[in-house]
Length: 459
Image 1 (cartoon, rainbow, N blue to C red):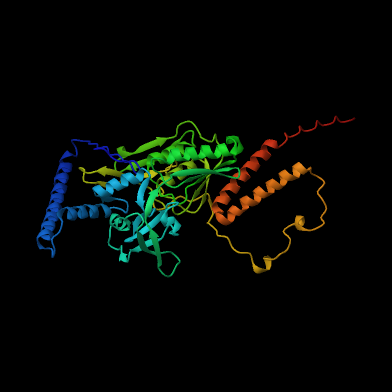
Image 2: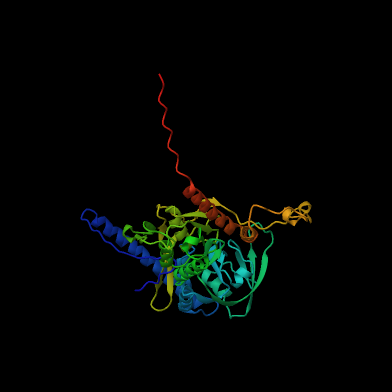
């Protein structure tokens, strides 16, 4: 049966080892276990028939069985679940990069729907929904007791229709009511642009288009800069990236690594493990990389971060990531939908699992917001000597040199404004600028002069 590879790749390999010394006890134990399983299945059949015959209202047998299957899967962990045919089709469309909805990645936590991250440029992002928010009501209906898929279905609806969501946010006393308008979510999985002398690659999800979109974005930024030698490095922005396809996470990691392991998975049985290694070739020929992460960085995005961090290929800054270190396999079931089953854990190249721990950045950088100047600093005082009347001219530069110097000052001032807009990104760019200055200084350092020969002593 074909398995659909989603957030991570899973495989099953069955092995059987027989030894004459233990065959008898094993056979007896297997017979006993099978008997117990059949007794439990008989119990299920009894309860199922009693519900069908005696429940206060007629019930749909198919829905009852699907609910039982989903309950069985969701009891395992927050990421295992059952999808009916409609939900399975919607999931397949989503991984291709276009779907209808609010643009929000969610998971189940403590009976409520927890926001992993909003997706850039969607109604959820525009409305100010944040990673870590809990959705407790949808159009006045509590989500407590619903499965994840049921709650998601509740949030779906015709494009253009409105939906009211009640959120609970950490450190905010009262619930927050937000009204959104449903829209068609067209994902641009990655984009690239130039910020000063730095190429910024923003990856919002890992779907079928992620690597190609990233490569096109990088090419665009390099063309604008005038070539690879004109940039000081790359910022890989994975903030609020909820993950997606493992195959794409491997391709993105491989794009900046020449060799070594990218990720490995270990299942229930030792033979289930898989390992992926980098191939020669680096899109930016060893230029420095800074990876940006936060609490909304999850799954496949954490795989990329862990691979680049463990190989010391990138400096990771921001705040701790989400911590989803498990592998889900999408297994179609007789044309009636599919089950999303956790089949393995994944491990970064150093052998660490980030499950429930997340990835700690090399440098913790919270996202700061702009603060107004104190009243005593908000004055009409001149900003500099150049603003005064009757000043002396600068006689150390030609007009052309002065024009270039002023242009550089303006560029630096424009870059500084980024700190108010996006402090974490500005910090990442500053790191790359510092590395570039250090590299230039090292290259320009004169060779050490040879020690002078000692003078002969006079007798």
